[in-house]
Image (cartoon, rainbow, N blue to C red; front, side, top):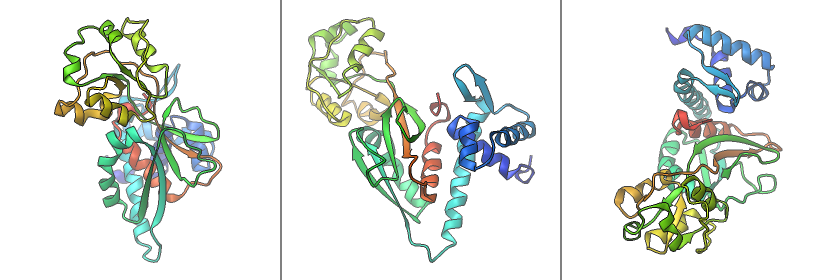
Amino acid sequence: MPLARYSLNSLHAFAAAARHLSFTRAAEELCVTQAAVSQQIKALEAQVGKPLFLRTARGLQLSDEGARLAPAVQQAFAQLDAALSLLDDSAPPERLTVAVVGTYLHGHLLARVPDFEARYPHIELRLQTHNNKVDLATETLDAAIRFGDGAWRSVEALPLQATPLTPLCAPSLAARLRQPSDLRGQVLLRSYRLQDWPAWGQAAGCASLVARGPQFDSSVLMVQAAVQGAGVALAPPALFARELASGALVQPFATTVDVGRYWLTRSLTREPSAAWGVFRDWLVGQVAPREVGS
C-alpha cells in the first residue's frame, strides 16, 4: 500500500504508543485524549490488516508486526525532525547533555555515536559517565541512561535493553569451573548491587553462594579486573561482546539472571527539547525490537 494512504496522525500516535507502551502516556505526549490515540491506532491496524498491539496481563505489548514497524516509524520521524531543523540556517547547534552509566556506554552506545552525529549534525551531543547515581532534577542534564527497575520519582523512563547477568572470567580461571558450586572457592567480584550474586546462585541451583571479593562501582572496571585474573565478575555478556569474542573473557555457565534493565530517563519537571525527542527516537531505534518493552 502506498505510504500516502497512511495517516500521518495515525503513524505519530503509533510511534508514541510503541515508545511508552501506553495509550494514556502517548496521549499526554501528543496533547490529545486517550480516546483519540486509541482511534488512530485502530485506524492504522485496519489499514495494515494486522494487530499492532496486544493487551496482556502485563499491560500493553507490541505484536510481532508492531515490533517490526515501531523502529522504522520512530527513526523516520527523528530523521524528519532533523531535516526540518537543517533548513533553518540561522539556528545554532542544539546542545544535548546525556549522562550514561559506564557499562552501557562501553558496550552499546559508544560505537553508535558516529551514526548519530552523521545523521543529526545540528545537535551537539555531550556525554557524561556516572555510576548509576544521578539526580536529573538538580543536575544540568537533559537525559540519563541508567540501570534499574524504572521506578524513579518525577522521571519519564523509556525501556532499553534487558541485559541479564552471568559469571565472566579469564580463560585460565574458567578451566577450573565445571559446575556453579565450584565458584564457592573463587574470588567473586561485586558491584554495588549486593543482591546480584545470591540471585544468580539461586537461579543456578547454588543458593548458598556468597560474594566476598572486592566491590566496584563500575562494571567496566570489575570486568577489567576479571580479564586480568583477579576473580569472577557477574556482568552482562551482551555488553562485553568484544572481550568475549577476542577470548579475553569466557562465560563458563549458560545460566543468567535478570535483575533489571537499562532505561533512557529525563526529568518530568523540565520541558523536553526537540533534541531530546530526536535522540530518544534514534536510541530506541538502535535497540532490537524484542528488547524494547520485553
